[in-house]
Length: 77
Image (cartoon, rainbow, N blue to C red):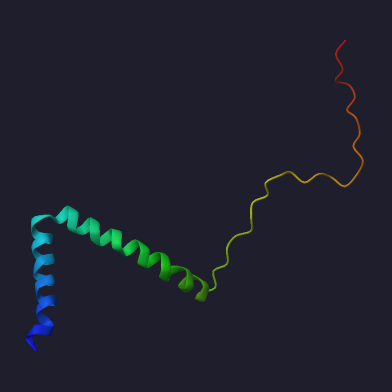
């Protein structure tokens, strides 16, 4: 039975030692591995709570639906 558990114990001991000897690298790896997990799990949770994306921002100014009149009074002499 100990042969099944032994790799997990060794992995835990290794991670414990790394957290003590190289905390910056250890916690950087932990935080970096959380990112992809959150990218997969957060969108379904947001949809379940009723989140809807905002409307798209217009990329152009809407032109009026009428004929264009030429401007007057700004001519050069």
